[in-house]
Image (cartoon, rainbow, N blue to C red; front, top):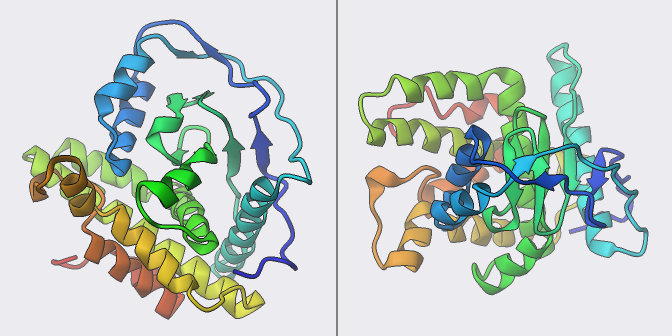
Length: 283
């Protein structure tokens, strides 16, 4: 993946030096929300909920600038900068300005407007403060646990979370939340979540299409890296890894095949209009 000429985003908050703002109190709604996010990575939500019983959000200390001798932090800042260029152009073409999200680097745990954030959850997006959160140790987890190494696989993870930011800006996330609340059963509610996640995968593909068209960022093997990552975090793959079998009615993010297919849909078309996972009968 070629990012040598890519400018770093100025929207990165580095809290790794200790500014997490975690205190003590009972479990909150935000912790429950993030526990659901934990299922994305095959993490038992109970782990998050148990930890969350002793955590609360408090004031966050001032973030530090990214060290220039920290290649992974610089990489993240450049990927975020690339997403800002892509979505800035897409929004401008429709006559709107793109309000970019912040990206927070943290270690172990940190406070968010959605509750206590934990490294065990993997990367996540909090719509309440419009921030993407990531503990960079997750990238080692991708390599060792999910067997999905590579810089473009790492970039795909960030682009997916930025995809959730796009959904938040467009009102899609709120619509899905209402639909889930009125669903007849849990399986139906989960299907709305699956469609939301697959759309975020498609948006990640749209970013890759535009970024490569503008700056030629893709190198041989990059797309395969992203596909490997998408396959590794499919619900069926995660459930089989964790318990030996899959339960389709409990899926919240889509199968490996679906995640790869919708990422490729965005990558091949570069068209956000081709990412509507809600208007088709079968995903």
